[in-house]
Image (tube, rainbow, N blue to C red; front, side, top):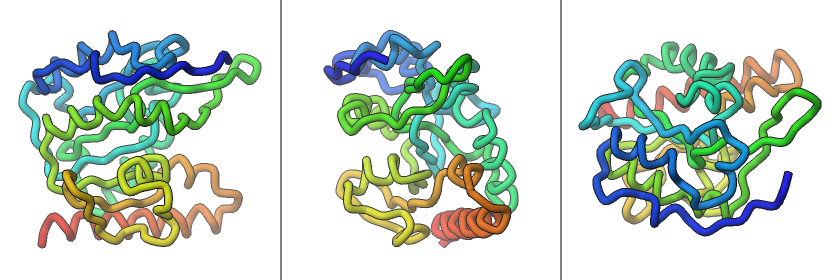
Length: 218
């Protein structure tokens, strides 16, 4: 794939930060060239309430970027990782229909392998270019807690030195943001090498989600 030119999304983000306005405007974003190879931009949503004008959620989950299924359907976390997330949220006692779920980057970055589109990690410049959309979502949703799913989301807010493996499940505090809890991305659990690793990582993930729920309930 060709190199990705980055200019930044600021000029494409509307002044009105309601989710329907943002969801429409993000389709015209040309802040980086990832849009050229994506089907559509994928903004966040609360499952079951994708068209609410005013949406506030106590918990906001942020992943890395849309995957193949998300790119085609235009909704976040609807593929295999999303199905695992659903099961783990239920196990942790969290209602997904009360959680706003989005991604750090709004377009699917991929590379071809035959007829398959394989996920490709977004660059730091692409993440930075897309930050105005995330900030607009935060303004619209006004969460009390951010749960970062995976290193890309966590480091985008907490800095490159942050390590999910070291500080997962522990509330972090950064100026201008609500409290942040980082945990693994469910896609990484699906990539575990052995069943034992998968079971262990799933248990740790659910434990982190329970800590997030407890934080909001305290």
